[in-house]
Image (tube, rainbow, N blue to C red; front, side, top):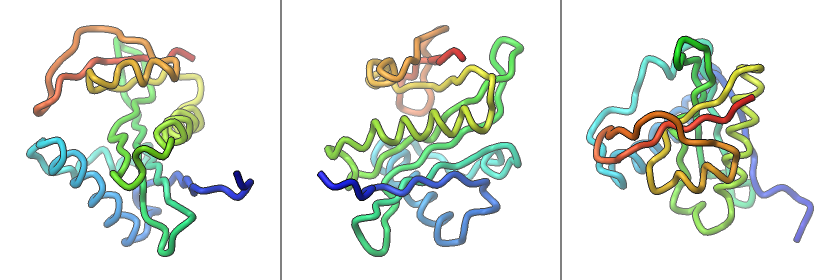
Length: 160
């Protein structure tokens, strides 16, 4: 295996993304959440442009132009009256699946959350079939599962 990195993760505020990056990000989200998972909603949210939110883009360095393979977002949120870092919109393009990239995406997403909101617990709403996956990164279920769109979700927390 080569020491040359395969992936190029970047973290930016929404306003710092180029038009090309915004297009790729919104296209990836629509492909995954709307088309693949059947969640009929627009994915453009006010929280995306909040000055405190950050967006992780995971590009493939082995191709030109570098395709966007994965993404995640961290936002300033509150759970039980405490400020937390909330990960969301975590997705991996079909071209990135089966290549062991989901772990790299999660490592980068957790690092982004820790850097953006130090000294805060990290939370996410896991799709129920992915609870075991997120558990591998230290997340533990809390609270009751709920349904959002067509998918049942379980709140999970990674304590500082």
